[in-house]
Every structure is written in C-alpha cells, then in structure tokens.
Length: 180
Ligand SMILES: Nc1nc2c(ncn2[C@@H]2O[C@H](COP(=O)(O)OP(=O)(O)O)[C@@H](OP(=O)(O)OP(=O)(O)O)[C@H]2O)c(=O)[nH]1
Image (cartoon, rainbow, N blue to C red; front, side, top):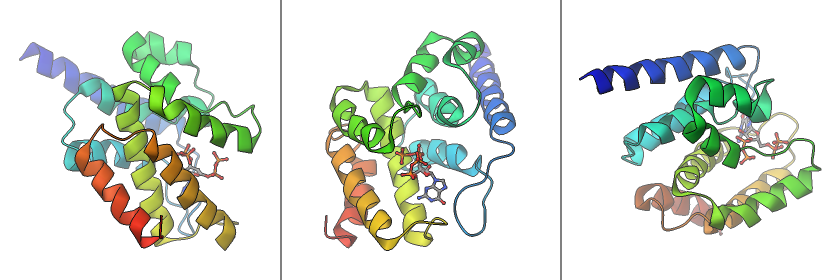
C-alpha cells in the first residue's frame, strides 16, 4: 500500500513538474492547444492502449519533452525523479543544438538500440503526433513537410518494432492510410 501511495505521489509530482515547465507553450495546431496535453496524452496512450504498467515508463512519458523543449536539465530530472527516469528521458531527448536534418537522422539511427522503456515512449509519442497530423496541419507546415514527417516517422518506428503489439498495430494503420 505504501508503495502505491509513493507511485501515485511521484506521478502527480511528474505531472505538476511538466505542467509548470510547459505552462507557456502551445502545440502548433490552429487551436493552439496547451502543450501539456501532448505529454499527458502520450502517457495515456501507454496506459490505455499499450497496457503499460511500468511506472517509470509512464513518468518518463509525462516528462519526455521537458529537457528538449524547456529550460529543464537532465540533472534536474535526476535530482527530482531519480536516475532511472532521467535515463529514459535522456534517450528520448533530441539535441536541439544539432541541425534539423541531423536530429531527424539520429532518431532513425538510435531507435533500434534504445532501451525497451525508451522505445515504448517513442512509439506512443509518434502515435500521438501522427494522429495530430491527421487531424490538423501544424501552422506553417507545407503538404511536403507533412508527407515527409509521415515517411520519416515510419523509418523511426521500423527501429522500435517488437516492443508493443497494440501500439505498433495502431501506427501501421496510420502508415497504410499514407501508403507507407
Ligand atoms: N503533429 C504535430 N506535432 C506538433 C504539434 N505541435 C507541436 N508538435 C511537435 O512538433 C514536433 C515535430 O515538428 P518538427 O518541425 O518536425 O520538429 P521540431 O519541432 O523538433 O523542430 C514534434 O516534436 P516531438 O514530440 O519532439 O517529436 P518528434 O517529431 O521529434 O518525434 C511534435 O511534438 C502539432 O500540432 N501537431
């Protein structure tokens, strides 16, 4: 019972941390959805659709964009949430100092050798973003960029396969709608 309480407390702490860090950010959709909807939604895909019950994976999903997209450091994540969660967050964090094409190339390269935990977060992240992309075109994106994103995502997902049947099946449905 005390373990449960601890996990619950940690989950709320993660949610609050991410909400504070992303508080001024919006998604790129025309409705300018609050950014926090994305990490919460990624965590929800994992529990609800992927059947994932590993609390470290769910916490890392909630925190997954804090280092990449806010002033959060990995040391801060380690201090607040421990080295295991910090490790997963590190694996799913792109180095925004690198040129765009290189960042995207490295995701394809790193996918197959990622930990199972990081692969789960990546699968749910891609599923969420591709669903968003089917619903609305992000502001400033050309049709070519949208098509390129679907194609690139399918290459990243190739390297994540064999991790979660349900999430991969949902991604495959999306890819087949786009002839991938
Ligand atoms: N489809 C979609 N994406 C949006 C929206 N708002 C923000 N994003 C974010 O945009 C990122 C993809 O945009 P890009 O132009 O390719 O990349 P960049 O922002 O990292 O430079 C994703 O980052 P990411 O989560 O780090 O994932 P990844 O693409 O690097 O895997 C996604 O979360 C939206 O309304 N729709």
